[in-house]
Length: 301
Image (cartoon, rainbow, N blue to C red):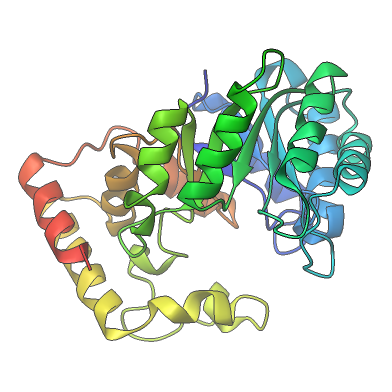
């Protein structure tokens, strides 16, 4: 069982220093959170190193469900080979300072490697005790269905229990195929970037703030696709709903994703403790049906 929100750690060890990461992890756990998501390529391993230190010094290992990923090399090339995956998992365990993770995920689909080879690495990871469960990330609907069906086809294979995909009011493509495939496979859905890469908070309505991700060389192109006119109309609708409900735009956007059918736990990626505080404050927000319907209509593009 995982908390209704997962804590993403992509910025840890880079834009988020260890002391702020410690404050966020403590606050997250105190608020009832337990799912913490990282990956071997985040900060070239820096995220896992920071999380591992905090597990040893700040939050007990048993209080956390630790999820990490593999299949993307530091140069951005996908590698789903058994050789790479199992070596990457061992390296992740070493950085985290643990003997197992709770959820190990394929970070991307590698078309150059036979899927049965890739999935055999998941079976080995579970059988050896290096992970308790396995999942996928950034798999198209047919890729998820194929992987899940292969794992179900023979007793003893590790089932695919989760999938991570981008999902927000600005990015609803997963509703067409991924959500139905996940439901059929019995896999939980862990949406990443549920705040539309930060755009749905309303921070970019009048420009690009100097302290925002869009103002940095590393993340400018990541945010740019959501700064167009269609996105602006959706953001304004979120702001209008927030004003009417007396809550923040962040609360409206996040609760919309969190309560969508099929969603298990959105993965939020706050860069600072203040951002996490704002996120945790949304826990009690539930959108009225008429607001949800209106947001569905305006974002259904």
